[in-house]
Length: 290
Image 1 (tube, rainbow, N blue to C red):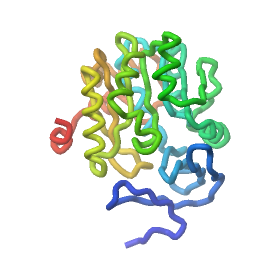
Image 2 (image 1 turned 135 degrees about the horizontal axis):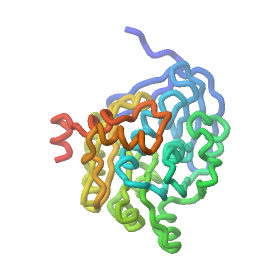
Image 3 (image 1 turned 120 degrees about the horizontal axis):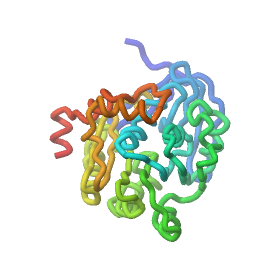
Image 4 (image 1 turned 90 degrees about the vertical axis):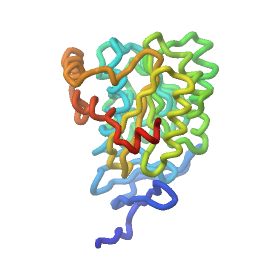
């Protein structure tokens, strides 16, 4: 059995399990106003970004996360024009949204401006210039305050709200409650939807079930789906929540037709077969989310 190398980056998935990545070279590290950050150059993932010891994104596998978070709801929407991202300072979600020619405006609200600075300097391969797209409105402020106060005061409405957040612990915990979900819902257009990640079902089953329950308390249609994300070391869950939009209703052929008709290219993961397959839940997940 090969033991972990001495220069390994570890992350716990639960109190009883975790995984490691060979570190390589530390490019930059420090402490922002809100969290500790690290940028590493690693043999497996290229440049890799960590916050408070948790893996966030990497050059070589970011598409597993960002393509699934964005395209599952967007391809189900007839013509997404306005989107709100809470978090997502690396720019990966914005980059996927701008693949839609109908997208007119994206508001990105990131609490920690240092995340945006690090993305600009080290992760161009993740955001691909989206942080400088003229359709992007960057706001460095509290996402909770923006949703609760700023957006309602301005009469904002969005076709898609993306919660591209850290795990529901610490400051981010308030952004995973039924109250916050309800406040997001109030900002959605008639066919609007919210999308977010919900965690690892094997290692965080109670957290995942609670998040789905919180979504169901607010939205008529809650659609969990699952994929493997290499950097997160596990099967990972996401969900689309809406009162009207149901991405599960799309067949694989229709998804592929929409991808072609909307001229969405440079997809490394997402396609019609993947879209349908990710909603097929094994029995243990059906029971967990019943």
